[in-house]
Length: 468
View 1: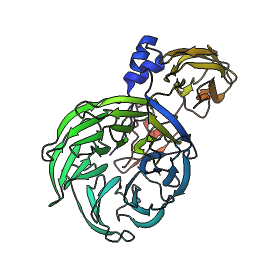
View 2: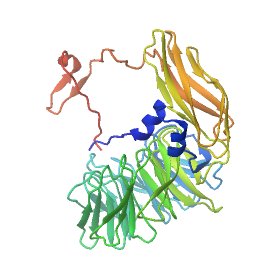
View 3: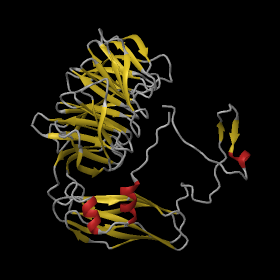
View 4: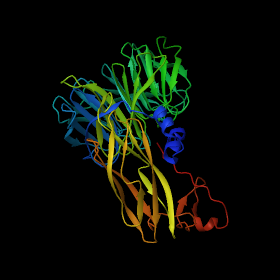
């Protein structure tokens, strides 16, 4: 199966091109309704998802140490307290046991009775093509979403030595995550939508086709409704009071690609690449976006919880680090700059483009100065924005020298006093339009090797995907 990220162009294209006026931006963007409390950027790459247990937020990291623990008891200063394990995709905890799902490396079990997790068991499927994406424990059985191999069952009578029980297939297999309520499994089943399995007999008893890609699922406290992340299609609310006949309540569009989620009370936190979003799900028939924030890099995953200090927080994995948010507005100015990367390509004389600087906080924002590398200029260099307003900034690239640097906006935003945008010009490390492609050699679906040189004079279409 191939998984593609498709940005929500209706929002981003208008913002990045400057296609909206200030009044439109206030109506569409305005104050963001999510208050950044603190960040920790000690993990640079591939932070995928979070699972909160009390004051500890467990991060799944796709490269390097797969399981990391962050103490968020002081949300203003989240602290990493542990880093261990295999590269991971998703974490799920029940009681003092946490399960770290590691794709083709199976699942690892950790004792989390102490802040630093301790590995106590593991299970790796024999077939290296089977990918463990998520799971749920019911009694002494762990039901694992094994993606294209359906659901796997592991015996947890001894968590330190989990035994293989069996597997079962759905009508269509694309299992990303699973939850349990009242004798039924509810499975986020990729491009096929929702699948419902009766644990009495392990029968798939119902399906509900949904648009997009069902990649995560959360339940309401009473188990009557499920919330499903649908990538570019947003978040679905589904009534599951009758498991044999799940019914769509509504689909709430997201600003980005809804990837993973977490819920506490009526707050549904969504990592929606590249945004962190908060939805009010008090009325399952009408989930409403109540907050959002453009994260530092790519918001992949999110969870929500209440700390021992009584703070309702949302922890967001944004690929190169993590942020802790609270519901509500930043009382001061809050700077956001789009795009976060500019590539002018080859510049013979001059080229120009437009950036957008926004204030999504509840107070005034003063951009005091702008610093640019040689060959790049910005106009205007300083300005003040009222809450919810934006400023279009013209960026001009000139000269033939190579630039690989950043544009820095200095402001009185207390959370982000320096906002940086990467900028490139005449960068020989990037292929430009018209540059000859390198002569790769790849194995085709016909089991023959092909080189780009073989296709000289022909139109070549390349599709990049992944086996998972």
